[in-house]
Length: 175
Image (cartoon, rainbow, N blue to C red; front, side):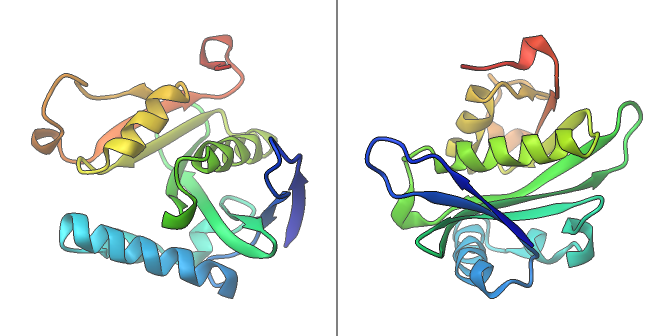
């Protein structure tokens, strides 16, 4: 496990990116809240339990938490994704604690996961988000992810909304 401090912004407390595992007790409150949210929106949280923890561990996976004063306030993960084409990871479990939303933390988690994936030689990011998560859809669009679905269609008619982003390509750079 390793941690990296992020520079403070606008008087906010210093944040730390903590690379860890799904089993880390610091992750439990975030994962519990995510389980509750999935159940409230979809009636089930089965997607959270469908992958072995080892898939989110190095060398092919990653699990990180964004810590404020030692407490997890956001997090996310990736796992190797088998696909034709360039080496790809699938982003999963990007989540911000409900008391810390609308502060740009999910974007910071996303950037940390992108950096980690690039450092490990991955070239493509893939993810899906649920049709009842418009805030996630907005985040990925704003972060330069390309929707692999018709954005004008009713999300409920599509099911999981897939996105992709290629790393180290000029057209993906966002301010």
